[in-house]
Length: 89
Image (cartoon, rainbow, N blue to C red; front, side):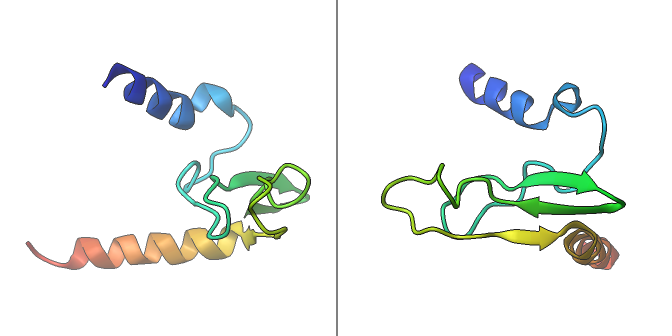
């Protein structure tokens, strides 16, 4: 249990990213290879992408590009959460 807790803390710890706050940090998974999507920002735009679709992919994983617009996916998820919270128990 302690090892699992350490992995979770490392994954979500704010000390690992002091420059940007991403709503879905560490929560989005690449549908092709199963790795966690990484958030990247620049020029007022940010996206979540898979860093394991090219040369760093496993030999049995097909080459792929997985990139999702950050504003779009965060808005969709946030709206879904708001709708869920409106449902009474």
